[in-house]
Length: 432
Image (tube, rainbow, N blue to C red):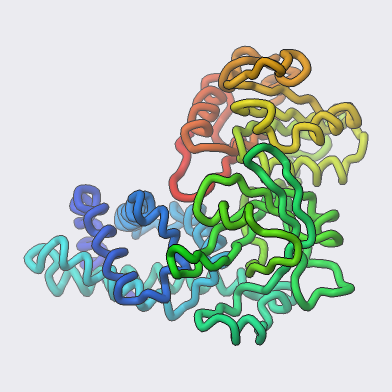
């Protein structure tokens, strides 16, 4: 597809009105898209639809696209993240056509035919087509490869049971369930068709899509959950997720028992650690330190990455690791016992716990270190945060407000944004 200079100008000129009317446009878009195409409800998070989070997210993407249409490389990072999410949801090329048609209809309905005239409509149709083709091409990569293709192989039994069957989800059964905290469980799954085999190896920090039937909605729903175990263990024992009982689908996950079945998509995600020249051994024979900073259930991707590094490094002290976590009480701190054991076992690992809701039986210095939210200024600059090493990488995961606060504090301590990496659960973004 091609777009002319004049059409680019029209799309750019629409940026101010998108900023002003963006949420109105996307509210209209989702309402009409899902009423006309109910089969798409399984892809969209219905809770986010009702809260207004999903419409706001799409409005932000449209605005950024209008602003940067002549320099799409600015959007490369966000687009790649969306590609991974789409692959975990099983988004198909044909669905982009449906979305595009409704988007144009909603732009005209909200802006009116005087503003969104035929010339503007044609310009936006061309612009959307370019974006859609870029997304489709990128997502093809997420669906190809021997391991992925085996995972995505048609599951006839599921197809018979479910008229809205998707080939992007493989039937998996629960093989283990562990209570990790008062409101957190771990579920381990093994896929049908992999008996006597090992599972595809994912990158620590990635997630999978979980597809379940929601009776009260009369609808299939998909949620993404981090794979919380180290890859080497998971490929032999089963993929593990660790949901907090906080929402409609997570509640269903908590009620699952051994042998229950769900659909899982192939692992995706960019919140990973990959060794690079800047993190390998330096002149002083050390590797770049990693500092993990989490709140609540945000610890799951960080745990996977940390376990993977400890598996790789063993008791080698060339890479220092710091684990900094915020919890509302020790009883809500999933994996605390395991982390304490790891600290005792690995000399390169240091842990600090912030507790915002200390209970009578919780002891400072034993169960937690600080009675407050995470405050970087009470931590040891060198031993806990490794601020004196310009190679240190900071992995942050938790609620968006928490990540923004931590990122801001790190910036004030002299850490550049390119040494921070954050994982956003659901809709939204961080601003460092």
